[in-house]
Image 1 (cartoon, one colour):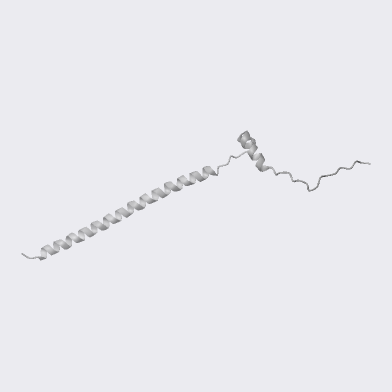
Image 2 (spheres, one colour):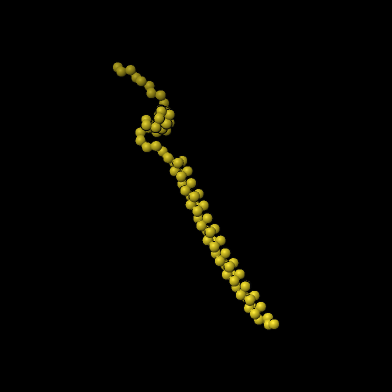
Length: 94
């Protein structure tokens, strides 16, 4: 009995295992890439929604925001009066 067919069969098995391993690795990398992309898109969408919700400001006049919010807005929007350095002395008109 010759060993040549046994050797050829071993080489054929090794090549088939190599191609099967390469295909498995390629498919695993493809699915991992798709999963990573999906997770990235979901996290990006959630972060963007949270960012927009945090930066949301109502539009329109301050009285439309409610009493408390209108008071807060008015307190922030108005400037504090400047104090004079010396008191004003009033002179009586002659």
